[in-house]
Amino acid sequence: MENVIIIGTGCAGWTAAIYTARSNLNPLVISGTQIGGQLTTTTEVENFPGFPEGIMGPDLMMKMQQQAERFGARVEYAQVTGVTRGEDGIFTLDLDGKTLQSHTVIIATGASARYLGLPGEEKLVGRGLTSCATCDGAFYRNVPVCVVGGGDSACEEATFLTRFASKVYLIHRRDPLRASKIMADRALANDKIEPVWESAIEEYLLDENGEVRGVKLVNLKTEARSELELKCVFVAIGHVPNTSFLQGTGVSLDEQGYIIQTKGTETGVPGLFAAGDVADHVYRQAITAAGQGCAAALEAERYLAAHE
Ligand code: NAP
Image 1: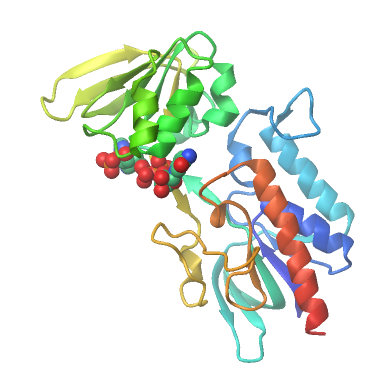
Image 2 (image 1 turned 30 degrees about the vertical axis):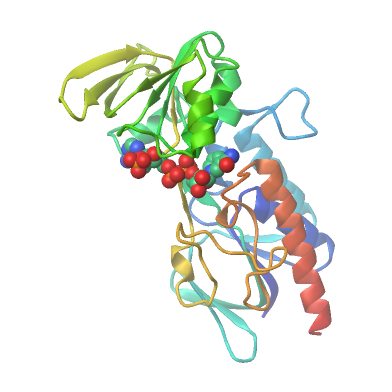
């Protein structure tokens, strides 16, 4: 029987592991398929406090894991497929072919950026294709880039990118934008943003190093094809929270599938806490996820003390 099982190894998961390990709760961390989470798909992280020179995303995640393991956190490299809470308050977790039991569970499974689903896409992430303007925008100074999407995220990212890029094409499959009026108006009023309406990317064009040098577009109304020369594609077509394994736990999800936190990191199911991007579609930053991981650990610790 475990005191605390943490599901997920992104910033929220490892921070929860560091805190619960230092509280002598001997946490068990379940890795999931993408060990280290979203930051392992980025290059340099320049906005995580404490690294004035920046740090590569995978290195940051490895350091977090080392820090958690230094205090005794254990890692099981597996995928959780189901969580249930018995009438005795004990959680049972189904892993590939085995079960584990715990008094508390912290869900930190994050969210995965939705990409376009074009062939070879996964190999281009970090090579001129990204879903995070805050992370990667500063690498594209004085060059043209594009943002795909028509929601608030796309408008926010396009507006943010005008600080760096010479031009930002905003490629949306419809006309008008889905974004709220204020966000849409702000983006469209920006001289550096050029909307490309009713269009979709059909193909990424690559240079001799295999990096993005442009995109091939199709106009969805006229079917006319065209090409745009640019250095980076920022995809902002939404995120998918990794919550599909939570059916039957009693956790409430919003209409997009994010866990609804009832108070702090509590989920409404006693002893079950949620931290990071699996419950946060607003900030979605490494540091905010880490902060929630810390909060979930403290709340799990208090819950265990109260139920001793
Ligand atoms: P969203 O509102 O769901 O918008 C996604 C956009 O991507 C839509 O314009 C959609 O097109 C487009 N899209 C979806 N799948 C696509 C595909 N396969 N190919 C091309 N385009 C595709 O997502 P979001 O912008 O990430 O926002 C999520 C939530 O966070 C929203 O509630 C938003 O208001 C909120 N948010 C708020 C702020 C803020 O207030 N500061 C900032 C960011 C996000 P269609 O329009 O045709 O469906």
